[in-house]
Image 1 (cartoon, rainbow, N blue to C red):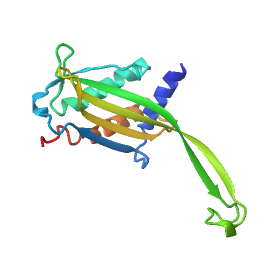
Image 2 (cartoon, one colour):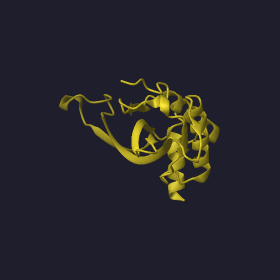
Image 3 (cartoon, rainbow, N blue to C red):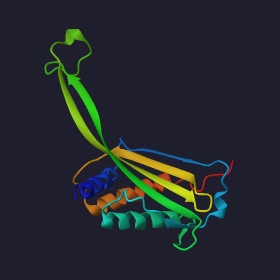
Image 4 (cartoon, helix red, strand yellow):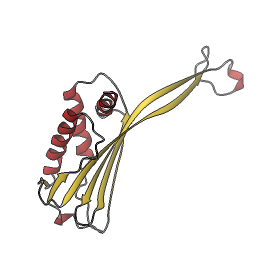
Length: 174
């Protein structure tokens, strides 16, 4: 149950509308001819342990990939799509002076330091050539996890993130 809550928390991380802590990137095999890939299937790594969110992520991803000419086909697909969720705790240390604010040296007076444990989550999406079993494209997104979002808000934020992540897909052949 703890893992289900943690995975739901990761989805909450992706629900940060306008959050500046969201970091995204993508990379691909420069020699790959993406025009020959038309179908895909889900390759579950077990990292999304909540079955409801697993289905929801698949549905949102299916919509996004369809917009880029990729059709879900479970028998004999061209690509595997693997989504990996990772959770971590980042430590943030903030020092300040209660009388002067944030300190800049010994002359500012007594200093107080607060240490915060900030939960964060990352999502990795791999597009893998089924025949060659090599990753052709990888997109990543990571953010601080925030609580208190409704499922619809989380799904909408996931849609926004995937739209940005796949904005340049298919990439040009070099």
